[in-house]
Length: 457
Image (cartoon, rainbow, N blue to C red; front, top):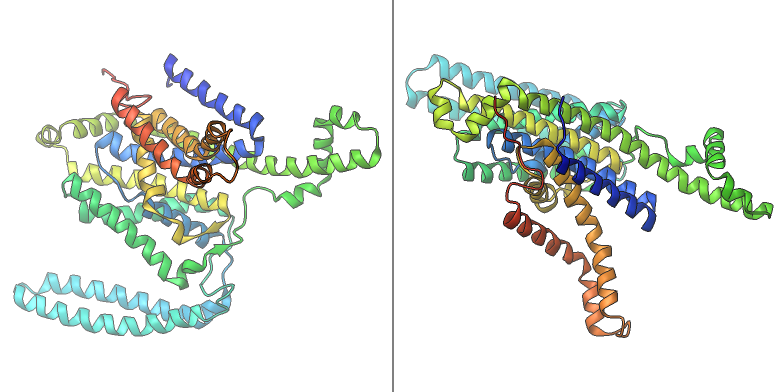
């Protein structure tokens, strides 16, 4: 069983206090919104930390793996669009079969024909003809699918299952993409690997933007089903109304007028429904985060985890001891990507929509890496804490900056050019905050707020 150090308990207590402070100052709904995104960010950070902190495998493809998780949420939860399947399903099926035949044909030729020059010519002709035939069926099928009610549909839809299943499927999708990337790129030096993973993640997002038959592209997918109740259903449920009445009985009893009391109760029910929904999300997300945290720690303390740290610290020595470094790098890369994919599906679940154009490297790659560095790579609790600290700072930077600017310019008119300029620039102060936090951590705590523990076997 993992025991927390005193400074770790202090860090956790400070973070909890900040959420309580926001709850009292800005409202509990705001506090829970930030909490939910902090939990999802912490899961993303754990995925990166597992590959980088355990084995030193750099992964700048976070954005692509998150997008695969988001796609899984659509495919699992959105109901199938039967008309689209009728007009284009057969064509896509034929394209897939032809693609599989093309791959097997190339593999067979490479196995049978020994002479390289002949093999290259035959493969080239087969690939050229195969692409032309596949392209014919594929383009016709996708064009027919995208023409089906493009304003509301224009894609195949999904399986119509509860969206919570997509969290597991999102991990599988991301793991599959990571396996392919790892097979191609894990032999590269770390700086080249970073470039390759970032580039491939951009390719993944670009495909999702432009293949409308699969994900509606830039038209976005909205109306995804929730795993928690809807506010309107709660507001009409007797048990919820009775619960809100009981929790606010003293406040309601202070109101004498019946109409005022009913109006106050209605407002409390509306506010309470939003808080209940956000709290339900927080409980679900927290369960997933704790499960991943538990197994990640178990893996880190196991013989396999010690082997991964040995590979991270000295690949040459690990190779000399007979360890297959490339294979182990592939395993850890796939595991880390799978966790990021789970977080991607959870993010779409929380938003209720899938927007491929919203996946940008700044938000979904570099901010995640800042979380890892600030929290402490190699320490799962540090990764979680980094996710909480950075996302909290990212959100609260705007209101904090606005407050500071207003205080410093109290003597100026609201229309003053300097004051207006500063207030208009508030969103950009987030980047200043991120840079300042990163610089301070690298200067005074280079191993992170909660650094990796040194364990002696």
